[in-house]
Amino acid sequence: GAGVSQSPSNKVTEKGKDVELRCDPISGHTALYWYRQSLGQGLEFLIYFQGNSAPDKSGLPSDRFSAERTGGSVSTLTIQRTQQEDSAVYLCASSSMASLNEQFFGPGTRLTVL
Amino acid sequence: AQSVTQLGSHVSVSEGALVLLRCNYSSSVPPYLFWYVQYPNQGLQLLLKYTTGATLVKGINGFEAEFKKSETSFHLTKPSAHMSDAAEYFCAVSVQGAQKLVFGQGTRLTINP
Image (cartoon, rainbow over all chains, first blue to last red; front, side):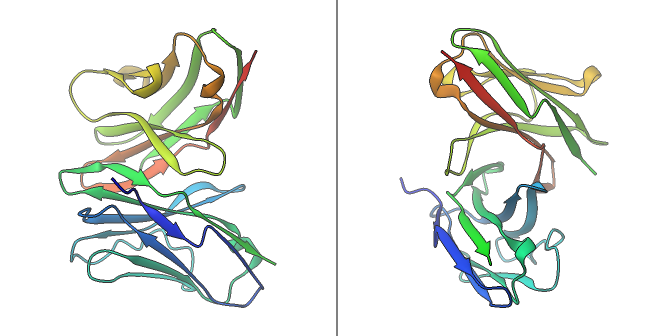
């Protein structure tokens, strides 16, 4: 079946602009996660959605970062007023209720802030 | 809080040789442990996981790992390396009730012909 998909695959933007990154989880998966992969910081957790519960936003690095999940499916990660240090690969993952500890990852969005 | 340390950011082995990638974790509660592999320009793929039960877990592509509580380790091994094993490998930890994964820094595995 279809895996986790992310769009765009690559995004180049100018410092100060806003960007939106999209994630389509595996159909039926109730949990959705965003991670960031960068050279300096490795793989970092950003935010976690589970069903209708309040999201765990504990990994968001600043208030310029936000995410929403509409209808319990698609999620959008928004970065406002982008900075060069936001350049990274943003990875989305999803998991099912039956196996919350097995996360399936998408291919990522490579963000470059000039 | 949990943490993971992967010893060796870069490991190089010959084709057919034993692969050993080291991972140590820190957790105040029983951990769930994972190994993921990442091929160039791709996302992460789960190799294997330990949650409860048998401490020796087998994964895809001939990899296995053993959970050793006394050593707080979860090293990844494969008896005979293939060229296709060249990739970056990440060890990760989570705990029940906290589904976010905490990753190690990764180990890049190179296979020499």
